[in-house]
Image (cartoon, rainbow, N blue to C red; front, side):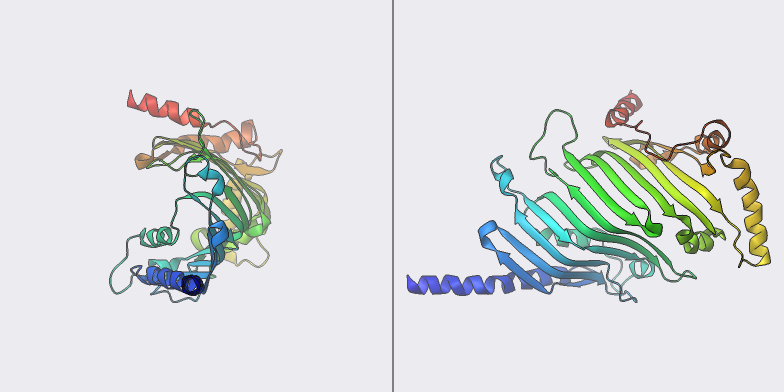
Amino acid sequence: PLLLILVLLVFRLYLPTLIKNYVNETLAEIPGYHGHVENIDLSLWRGAYQIDALYLNKVTAESEVPFLNFPQTDISVQWGALFKGKIVSEIEMYQPQVTYVMEDQEEEPDGGEPETDDWTKALKEIVPLEVNSLEIIQGKLAFLQLQADPSIDLYIDQLNLSAKNLRNVQRVGDKLPSPIKATGVSIGRGDLVIDGDIDLMMEIPDMDISVALENADVTVLNDFTNYYAGLDFESGSLGVYSEVAIADGYMKGYVKPLLTKTKLIGNDDGFLKTLWEGFVGIFKFILKNQGTNTLATKVPIEGDLNEVDSKVWPTVVNVFKNAWIQAFTGEVDGEIEFKDALKEKKESQD
């Protein structure tokens, strides 16, 4: 018995190293990528292990910014689901960062471009059970384009996300089973709120999601707008509001961007740029709502996901509607529901 206890004790002490080596081997086998974890900690009494400092990037990446950087990830058995006959896991991620550096991710390795889902398959192998609950605490999503002049840096910071019942442990009627909520802060200190329900158990997930981005300082987009449109803002705020419902692969929704109290021409602009911005500013003045000082439109989105149609003429009409008839409000309209997409799907099949 003492020898058995000693063997079990040695195995328990070596087990974190064994798991760490397995995880690192799994990351090393992803075509075109290289990854590493710093440490693995086990908590056998609660059926959990913690991954410290997971890193993943493309082998051809020229920048030192990692594609995935997960400082601390806690993976455990969701004990409450066991009483419902499901063996699933819950994950808590602390300050995870996903950074898409355009130049790094577009560069092909010598062996050719890997399959896009190779790295996601590897991460699934690291998690031995299906994920039913996901919590993200103070995360960050970022997009970088370094070759733009100046470089483009778009991000959502302070991201807190909660997604429950992802594996349908509990389900009542036809209601979408998995609630998802998220908050964050965008560039320009805009407030991001995501709220809705999804069903991930389908090949194309059903969902009913609303998104609101409010009070972002539009001047922080100058690098982006200047590079792609030759425009920059001296002042103003940006809001984006959207609702999307997907049922059986059919999408119905809208995107509503609002620019409020924006001014284009800056004191430091050259003659040609001032002329161009002044020309655009004339149309902005004509098309903005004079009462609310907003330039806005509403882009309807509808159709099969293989042929999604963002309707051009309603978008143009909505610009004039906001300017001359009734100003759009800075809020989610609450007019799209899951049953609407389901109804449109059935009608399209008739």
